[in-house]
Length: 629
Image 1 (cartoon, rainbow, N blue to C red):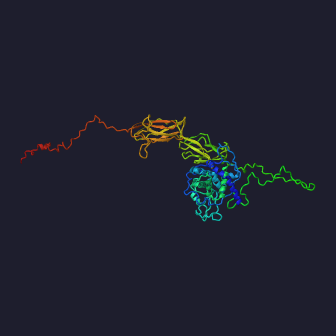
Image 2 (cartoon, rainbow, N blue to C red):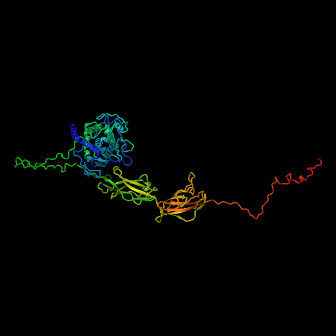
Image 3 (cartoon, rainbow, N blue to C red):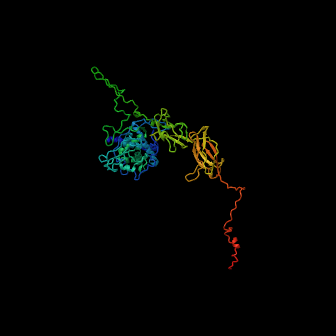
C-alpha cells in the first residue's frame, strides 16, 4: 500500500503546478464541450441558486471536515488526458458524448456542478470556483452520484450513505441528527453525492433546485453546498495553497488531496456528458481496495508485456550439432497492439438521445392570427436542429401559453408536449382564441434541457369587425317621457357578408353631430345605484344581428340619437323622440244658456229674519203708541 501511495503522491506533485495555473482559467470559462449551466429548474419556473449562495456564519470546516474523513474512492484517471472531439472555437457549445469512458459525467450531475459554479461566481466571484473541482470531488466521493443514478430533479434514486462513523477504522462521530438524514440514531454517516456528514449539512445545506428542501441526496443542493464550503474563509482557489486547503478541509488526507487533484486536472483537459445512470463506476475505495488491482492504470503507450519481437540485426543462434539436432523454429512473436498509443481509448460509442442532440429550436414562420372565439388558421410549430443545422427527429417539445391570454389548446389545455417528426418539426395542436383581444407569446422548450433557449412564437387575437351597421325597418321611434320604445334590430356586415360575434357599442347622444353621452336623453334602464344607463355594449348573434331592447324615454322632451359603432368602422344612427304627456284644457261656458241667479244669502236679506225691515214691525201700533204707554 505504501508503494501505491508513493506512486500517487509523485504523480500529484508532478501535476500540482499545472493544476494551480489552470484554476483561474477554468474559473472564468467552462471546459471544452461542456453544456452551459442551466439558469432554471426543470419546470422553467424557478431560478436555481438565485439568493441561495449565501455562506453561513462561522467559516468553513474549522476543526473538522465536511465528510468526517469518511472513506472515498481511490481510482485514478487514465494517464493520457481525454482528447475531446474538436469543435471550432466559434461553434455553439453542444453536448459531447464521445471520449474516454472515465471522462464521461452524467448529464444531470454535470449540470449541477456547472450551475453551482455559476451561482457562486455571482455571489463570491473572488473564490474562482471551477466546476471541474466539484466534479473531481464528486468522482472521489460517490463516483458521480453512483454513475448518475438520479431522477429528473437531481435526487438520487436510492440514498447514498457512507459507513457508520463508529471509530472502527474511521472517525468516531456520535449521532447528531437523530437519524433524520442517515437513518442511524447511534452514529453519523456521510450523505449523498458529495458525502456531507449531518452536522456539516445542518450548517451548509442549500436548496439550489428551488423545491423548498435542503436535501443532501439532491445533486444540485449538494454541489452548491460543496462549492460554498470550499470557498469558505475568503479562499481564492486560483491560488494553489488555498486550493489545497479547501480540498483538505473536505477530507484531511494527503492521499485524498492527490486523488482529487488528479481528477480535477483530468476533467480540466476535457469532459463529456453521458446519459444519467450510465457513468463509469469506481472500484477501489480507501477502506477496501480491490485485491491485486493496480493503483495506476497502464498507459496505452506502454502495452502490457508483449512478447519480444526478434531483433533484425541479431540472427537466431545456430545449433551445436547440426547433424543430430535440427534447428528450432522460433515461436511466432505476439504483436503489440496496432492502435495508435498516443490516442486514448474512447470505448464504445454512446448513442446520443435526441434530447441531447438538439442544439436549437427554430421558431416557425407562420403568422399566428385569429379573431376572438375562432381557431387559429396556422399552427404553432418549431424545428429541432443539431449544431450543424440538421433536423433532429424524436425530440419532445413543450408549448406553453402565458397566463395573460385566454386562448387554449384542445380540452382547455395551456401546455402541450409533442414530438418532432422526421423533418425535425414539432407542431402544436390547433389553438383556439378566447374572448380577450391581445398579442401574446407562445414558448417552446425541450423538457430536461433547461439550458437550451426557448423558441418564442408571437400570436395575436383580434376583435371581430364590421364595416357596416344597418337598422332593419324604419318605424319612427317615439315615446312619452318614462315610456318604453319599441325594439330596434340592427344588422352587421363585413365586406358585404354578415358579421357574427361583433361587439357593438350603443350610446345615447343629443344629436347626430355628437358622439358624447347625453345627460337627459333616453336610457337602457338604471344601474344598482339608480342612475340612468346611457351606454351599453352589445354583440351580434350568429346571423350577424343584434336587438336593442329596453330603451326608456327620459324626463326631458326632445330629439335624441341612438349611436351604434363597431370595430372596423361600422356605424348606425337611429333617431329617438321623447314627447311630453298630453294635458286636459279647462271647460269653456256655452253663451246660449240663461244665467242662473243664486238666492240672496239668508244671513243679510231674508225678510223674515231682518228686524229692521220687517213690515209688521214698522206698522205695528204697539211699537210707538201703546195705550198703556
